[in-house]
Length: 557
Image (cartoon, rainbow, N blue to C red; front, side, top):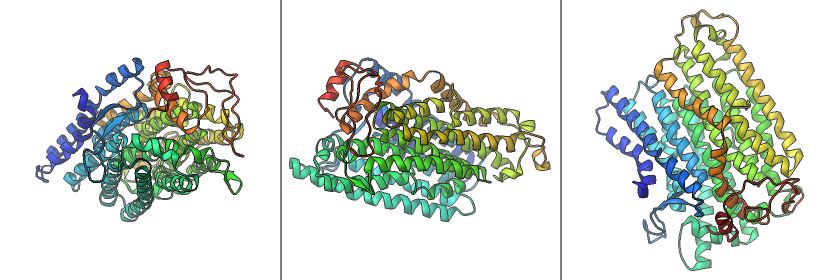
């Protein structure tokens, strides 16, 4: 099991989907039970990965990727594609988030889905496999197959089981994502043929492409960076590629919104970290400008616009689900800000905030979905005084609201604080523009809570609403536990991220002080050239083993 743990995790949901094909569609209870068992099973089989991966972290294993399965060119040798799986600390955390939210999402669907139940659960389990494959694949061809494979199930979940404007939202989601995927495919093919030009070997292996991609001439690298940027920015989504997100969230079923916000959006940020930074370091460090701003400056600028814009638009919403959807634009802006800060603090905070966003925003969509199941409306004006009739629900909602807005001792604070630390280390003006996003998040969430939960029950339709059922409470318990765990003791998460983050920064920003170099607050890291770059005032980098540091200094992939 140890040697094939990734394949077991990957295909457990798919096995459940295949089994459901043989269950009569009229037997809805059996379908629900089978789907929930396999969703829970997918989470349970991923749990052994936690102690095994932690043991590798403690043993200071210097290998960039762990639990590698398969070999290059072993799948379709004629084109150089292989079935190769492997994970590092970044993908490990995202995989655990995916298996947890997948189980919670399917559990939350028990009473929400009454039509075409069999098809719903089959497509949801297929979606789960596609998402896991994206985080595991170490072959670009295999990665693209999983990237596209999860597009169809999400399109169907929105288009069949969504709200009144479901077809519009589903088609918009599909077209946006497909446009980004086509550009990304062209960039992948360029990297593929460039690798052959350099080595004489056709290969989609990521570890092989890591060696040759940085050798691409700058004039081509810029266009390749932009092609990947569009593909990943649409998925995040970054401003101004975000317009598909509110429609998709509002029309999607509750579980679809949970998995969309919790996992699918992270594929964009994961792509930036896994591909854009190590493939094109010369683009991010270049002094070449467009409208007097470097490429890195544009990335930072778009992130800051997303933070402020998403928060301000959230303040104006009358629909609870649309408010949460726009809040995702703001929160993911923090994640991309941390990525392009290009230092260990910013990148570590970004990855942790991606996990935090999945936990907190996933819970927020569950919260909205529970009220919608009872009242079939998401209009804020329809509610008031809900805490009087649903006290348990109100308590859980307050915890998750505080988590989302970044209250100390909860998970959101740790991620946002670390991102802001890394940003201020680069340029204080960037951090200053980002800070209002934290204040605005508190404003729109607390104002929403006041209008929905405080006061007296003014609408007679709300007087007899029943509180959470045990099944509904069960969907929140793991999320609350994770919120407090990360908020109170985030050290293990930063330890897991140390090696992959330092390795990525070593490639994306040569000269930045990393393990193996004496690092303290007085050390001045090498600054990126260009108008947008400044020399950080401090470089607080967590130390890792000398063994790992040696590997990074040698540029091993």
